[in-house]
Image (cartoon, rainbow, N blue to C red):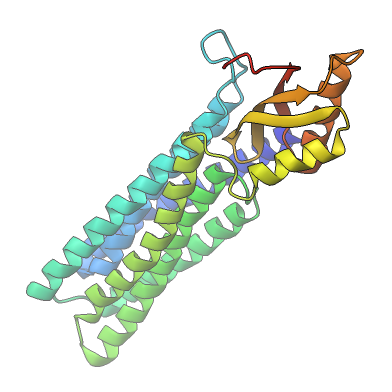
Amino acid sequence: MAHSHDSSNMRRVIIALVLTGTFMIVEVIGGLLSGSLALLADAGHMLTDTMALALAAVAFKVSKRPADARLTYGYQRFQILAAFVNGLSLLLIVGWILYEAIQRFIAPQAVMGPLMLTVAAAGLVINIIAFVVLHGGDRENLNIRGAALHVAGDLLGSVAAIVAAVIIIYTGWMQIDPILSIAVAILILKSAWALVKRSAHVLLEGAPEWLDVEAMQQHLVERVPEVVSIHHVHVWGMTPQDLMLTMHVCIDSEPGNPTDVIRQVKERLREEYGIGHSTIEIETVDCADH
């Protein structure tokens, strides 16, 4: 099932990559000819998107490699690294858009409204198709989520460019171009920061945000009769979907078969918390680490 998900996600990323990369060239030409910052900002964003989508496709390919002697957990974490890099690139694009918008306020430039409108409308159609393709993928996969956020930013950029073009055509007010560029940059900033924050949490091997570790410990003590206490609990994930755990489990006396206790704890971790890989250390008196 996981392999099927990865194959589907990779196909979606490649389709979005082809659409975005092809239209990026059109938008660069249109932005230069029309003089529109909104189009150039969106083209710059699409350039980053093309790179981000290519990185996402590589991440899906690399993450399928089996574990080896040097990377004993395998290469799944590469997807999270790709998502983190994508988030950082979005932040850089936001900074560039804001800088260019300030320059346009200081020295306004003429914009060819009709050409800008034509290119922006075509870009909107391409971005909608790419977003729908990615949105149909695994929404819990940070790599897909990062790619979708990039394309969503492009979609917003195209909408802003269309609005700016219409206003310029009918009113001649050129400053609407940098104003709407800033509005798009602020929207992108929120999504980019959320992606960087979540992927960094995974890279730092933080516990899942939804998991109350103390409540989990108490639950296991109550549900597994032989268990007296639990300590030294560490929970993290190779990805948000692939959780791992280590813990020390203290029992009141030596059971007939300690493996039975371990099996019971592992079963509850897997079925009730979705933690598929756990390492349990059984203790009867003192903690071996003290």
